[in-house]
Amino acid sequence: MAARKALSRAFSTSAVAEAAPALAQRSFLAKIFSSGSRVNTPLTDELPGVSIPAHIPAPATAPTTKLTKLSNGFTIATENTPGATATLGIYVDSGSVYEGPYHTGASHLLEYMAFKTTKSRTHLRLVREVEAIGGNVLASASREQMAYNIDTSKATLPEALEVLADAVLNPKFQSWEVAEQVRKMEADVKNLRDNPQTTLLEGLHSVAYTGGLGRPLIVPEGLLGGLNADVLADFYAANYTAPRMVLAGAGVEHDELVRLAEPLLAGAPAAGSSAEPTSSYVGGDWRQFAASPLTHAILAFEYQGGWRDVKGSVAMTVLQYLLGGGGSFSAGGPGKGMHSRLYTRVLNAHPWMHNCTALNSIYNSTGLVGIFASAESSQAADMVDVLCKEMQAVAKGVPEAELERAKAAAVSSVLMNLESRAVVAEDIGRQVLTYGHRKPVAEFVSEIQGLKAADLTAAVGKLLKTPPSMAVLGDIAHVPRYDQVAKRFG
Image (cartoon, rainbow, N blue to C red):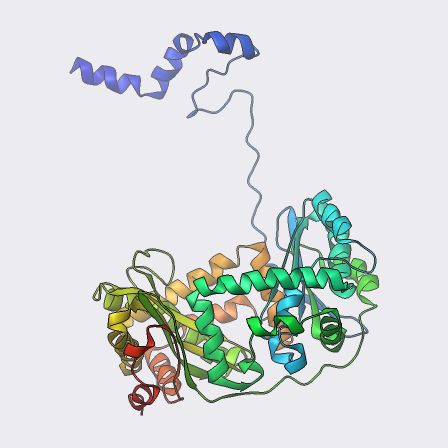
């Protein structure tokens, strides 16, 4: 009993305070290097003489997105999120769908040429200026949009904006610099052989669509030699016009950004927007042999409507979280892990399945929705059979509990991602390019929460009526023929 009391006393706050003088016996090194003062207050107690400031109250209303269109057609859109930092981005309605045979790979190369030499800055000077303000720059290319971003503190917002505008609007495509980036691209393209999902996605688009979306985003290795400064300058001049650009800002005051940006963006050409390239879904089969113990496959269908069909895109988003999946050892996280369908029904049931993940690639007016899987090559036929059954199973009905879990995961993921300032800026830029404005987050959340099981099964049923698209990489000898797979979906 006495021992228990002693133990209890030893771990109490008051006991720690009483024992403080004993603890204050400092080591030899502490006597040499410390200032001689020591705080004896336990970590569980408030420091004497230190007042804790009151909490900053939450704003009465959530920040809203404001838009201003300049005289040349350039759009500025902002949301003043709280914090000491800001993200700026210029988003361009341009990508591989706008490329012709002469320009194949131009969008891919523009990503590599971002934040290089401009008409007023050398690449070295640009890098030094970004470093001086503690900034971080990033560029990315996609099939329908290009993005250029810079993160900075609010105190250096004018400097960051000037660098961003100069890099995007005044690039100087020097032949030697372009050639250097093409060599880097060549090395990266060769390394893509180790990324089966990216390789399959490129193959999938090439057979699923005719027109713009059927063009490659990642330049084929055999066409790298055709990329040069003239090709890049020609593609840039045709597509980088003010009406097709949006300056998006998160963590900035709208009127202040407009005041700073207007003189910098006024020089962008005011040429009218070009027609959006047409893409027709046809479905098809792409296969490539690879000496590997695993065979990788994607089975996908067309989602008709794309992002511009809000209700339909919400259903496809919830479907992705419902299916979920991942690698053999994946667990946790919204929309994937041990609770999702592809984990409980596929990965847990088939030890030969190494990966099974829901997949979607949605664009303005269309999209591809399906499943990516990797399995031992000897089980390739069984793998395709599983993919077909899982897609068909959702069309037959979804238990209410699974649907509610998927909806909750989708809402959680949306709200969690929008806690990131960089994601907010990207969301603003891409939505303004797609819709002409930014839809409130509450609207998307409401659509997700209002989705019924019948709505989801109907959307998937419509999905499965389109011709399937398949892409396979590995030991293709064991994979069923395309016509056999297509017959299963009527």
